[in-house]
Amino acid sequence: MIGVADELKKLAELQEQGVLSTQEFEDQKERLLREYPGASVHESADEAMASDASEETTLGGAPFQRWGFVLVALCFVVGITVGRHWEASMESGNDPATEWLAKHMSTSAQSASDSTPAPQAVQPTPAPQAVQPTPLPAAPVPTPALPPKVAPRPPVVAPPKAPIPAPSITPSAVPKPAKPDQVWRVTVRDEDAQLGPKDAPATVVLFSNFENATSKAFAPNVRRLVKEFGKKVRVVFKHKVIPGSPGAIQASEAALAAGEQGKFWEFHDRLSVSTGSLSQATFEAIGQEVGLNTKRFQKALTSGRFRAQVLQDSLLANGLGAHSMPNILVNGVRTRGEKSYDVMKALVEEQLANRPKGRSYDEIVAAGKGFEQLGPSVGGFDTQGSATLGKAGARVQVVVFEDFQ
Image (cartoon, rainbow, N blue to C red):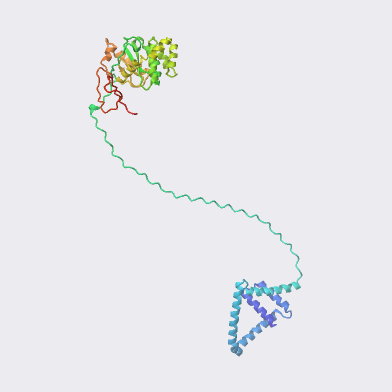
C-alpha cells in the first residue's frame, strides 16, 4: 500500500501548490481507490504517515550522514535536469505539471468510461446565424490645408502736403456783381421780328433759337404775355446761335424769310412745336402750312441774305453777356432765376411801375452797359511768330484765339 500513499501524497502536494482543484483532487483520489480496491483511504493515510516516520528515522540516523553528500549532489543534478526540462517545456508552450495531470486524468477518464454507461447523445447546438458586419463609415476626405494667411501690409500713407496758400486778391481786382436793376444796351432795329406796338412802355427782348429745348418750351409764353398785357408790351425776337449748330442757323434764316412775307410769328409758333429735323424739307412744309409763297420762300432761303442778321444778333448777345437761353431783358434789365413765365411777368410789372415818364426805349437803353464787339476802332494784334495761313499783307486779316479742346 506504499504506492497508494505516495500517490496521495503527491496529489496533496499538487493541491497545496494550486495545480489541482479540490474536485480534481477528489477525482484522482477516487481513481486510486478503484485501481487498488484492497486499500482504504485511512490505510493509505496510515501508511503514508508510517512512511514519513520511517523516513524521519532514517534521515535522523547514520545512513543519512553517510549518504548526505550523495543525496545533495543527486538533488542538484536532478534540479538542473528538471529546470532545463521545464524551460524547454515552457518555450514550447507546455506546462510539465499540466502534462502530468492531463496524463493521469486521461487514465482516470478511460477507467471511468469502462464502468460508467455511455451518456445520452446531446443534441448539437445550432450554429448561430452569421451576423452581417456593419459597414464601417467611409474615411473622411482630408481637407487640404489652406495656406497660412499673410497679414496685409499696412498701406503707405504719404505725409500730408502743406496747403498752398491762396493768392491774395486786392479788393480792386474782385469783380463786382451786376446790379439787379442793371440796364444793358440792347439795341432794336427795324428788321427785327416784333410783336406789339413800338411805343409800348415795356419792351421785352428775347434771345433764343429753334434748336435749344428750353427755348422751344418757352416759346408759347410770348403769345401769352402779349395777350395778358396787350399794348403795354412789345416783344422783340433776336437770334442766339453758335457756329457749331448749322441747323439752328438755317432755322433762324427760314424764320426771317417767312417774316419777309409777314409770317414770322406764325412760322415761329409752328417750328417751336415741331419734332422733325431742322432741314430744308421741314422748313418748306411749315411754310406751306402757314400760307407762304413757296417759290418766294425757297428763293429767299437759298439766297443766304438773312445769315448776316442772324450772326449780328448772336454777336450782340455776346456783348451783353446773354449766354443762357432763352435770355430775357425787359427795358434793358435782365431776368434772374429760372426761365419761366412768372419770372418774366414779374419783371414786366416792375418796369411798368418804375419806368421814367416821357422817355422812349432807345433813350432808356442808350446809356446802358455793353461790351463792344465790332466797334468803329480797329484793334491791332502782334502776330509775329504765330502760325499764319494766306498772303502776307492782305487787306483783311482774321486773328483767331482758340485751343484744341
